[in-house]
Amino acid sequence: MQVTMDPTTEINYALGITRICMQALGLWPRTSNKLRLTIIAIYLLALTEWFAGQYAYYITKKLDWMPFIVKIKHTVVAHMFIGKYLLAIIAGSQFGECLSALERDWHNVKLTYEIEIMRIYATKGRYYALICFILSFTTVTLQLIVPLTPLSESRAFPYPSHYWFDYQSSPYYEIVYTLKIFSSTILAACNVTVDGFIIILIMHVIGQLELVSEHIRNMEVMKSTIETCVQRHRVVIWMAETLENSFNLVFLCHFMVSAIVMCLAGYSLMKSVERNESLESVISMFFIGSIAFHLFLYCYVSDKLTEKSLQVGYSAYCCNWYQHECKQSKPLLILMIRSSRSLKLSAGKFIVLSLENFTDVRDYLVVNFKAEIFWYIKKYFLQVLKTTGAYLSVLRKF
Image 1 (cartoon, rainbow, N blue to C red):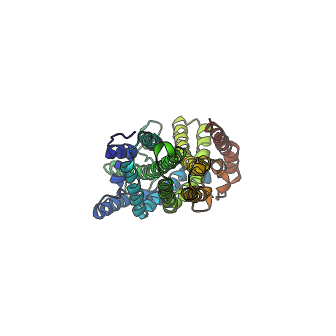
Image 2: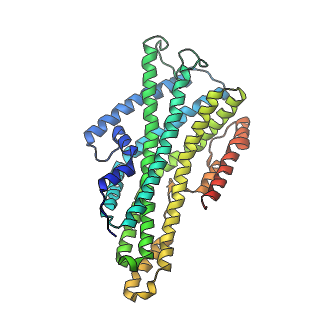
């Protein structure tokens, strides 16, 4: 049954707050190039102050190994966020192509069941992106208010920083602190916006694969032709491969740095628990949870993408192909051959994102820590991560 719906409203609902953040960060493909470049230049200039202050701190301060490990996690994760932002800027044209494909699918949908399936996956993508926003901005907010608590040092900054002027006196301290708030918000927004938009697009592709399977299973009822199913499947494969080819470096950036950052944050959590620093422990837990959830989302949607792509071939095999003429059934062979090669996401073309690799993230840790740190990580944090991933792998089957 055909129904009337407003495609623009559905698209805006699917993108949600991600669209607003993309426009604010200069990543929205429909924004004029002049405005985009202006926004990007302003943000990069603001972030220069953030990184310069931290670099100066590490150069001028002679820190012992343990305090250095506790403090460096913010700088490492900031490099990951700005790296993802720059990669998203470079992949701007691919963002536009995928967005156009999403809009085209919403404008072409007609039947009630098609709209329901697309709404289900649009809602999932929207909620996943929203959880990323909540976790990331909660972590940043907690970090920003730490210097304002009585437990903190007088006139401290949220992140370790040093400048070649009297930054402790007014109004310099207030100005620098305001810049820290601004730049920290930009960094968090860069991370969750890029992740959120990619997740929404991948969930849309998964929904389209579900539609193709549904078309094949109910070919006679819906009066759809085999050629139409094959053509739609071809478009979905193109979109999935475009996402993979365009953003595999983003996945690699997040996958590799996440292993290091979560290890640093895990060690910081253990030390803060030993010193009974409750606020720092809470921040470290949110920090770990945010990074781990982003990584888990990439692995989860990649697993779902693989599952749904293989399901298309299975649906073609189980349909009533024997009731059609030989000439009409041949396109199904093409569809099954294409489906035999599952769609997946990879980190840099050599690490397949999956829940199995999520639980084995320790294998990609490339930094050699001192024995005490590695012992803490191995005994407490990575074992918890692997166990949690195993439970999630079992629960998702129910």
